Length: 313
Image (cartoon, rainbow, N blue to C red; front, top):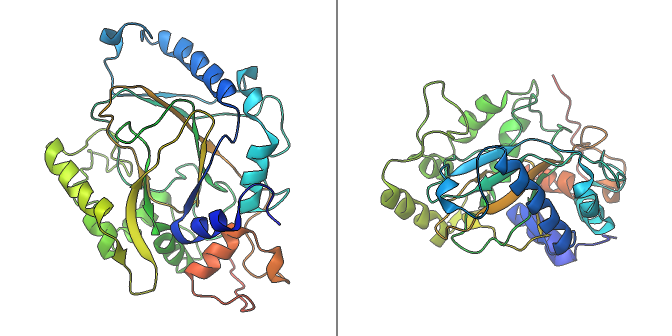
């Protein structure tokens, strides 16, 4: 039985690839972290009360084990994460103090650089990789529509699962993304995405030159749902929320930064949720599968009692 998420939320995660957990940690604790981050930004010359110092669209701050975030390590947060990856399988799930939080991304806008990708530049990618667990987006500020909420490509986790299943020797992230981008819907989605000189998979330093054209292009994918012949749907959605909310995404879900049209600084973190062991797609009983494992099996068209002894080559 899930501890935090409803059955409807779990089904939403399996179908769409993401779910929002309201107040996974208290709002006041999230705002304490935001204050801490403003102090770190001051070290970069950014004054909270002087907009003339907000000269860069985006700042990335590192990982912290400072006790300022201890209040965010709640049972509700751990329960929600483990509802998806399996009870006791999150490496940091039982840490109440000095858990690593990061990396923090603060968007000032208006035009925020970023490209479509799924995460994991720090490891070699297999279908059963343990290093990512989930894409964890923690909010430390109000994020309203148009306020630089993370864009997610609903259903894209199905594309990645199939590519990785076809490569048991594993793939570097950049190569995996190139193969996934051959899917016709993804190919069109990323068609305006520029690459910099070293073909950076995140395209962080070179967004499309024409902002109006970029927005019109994106609107097509947000306003229209694509029905894939394999039975799943694809659509772009902007995630929003309040301080203390967490968006939990499938580790294979494509996502991107979005422009900040409101001029209100957006504070979020992208925290890793590694598991103790690689995923297992051939457990002895169906109820032993985590929701993420079930979702990947569904992506591959496997029935509940159908074996799939995935082995790394």
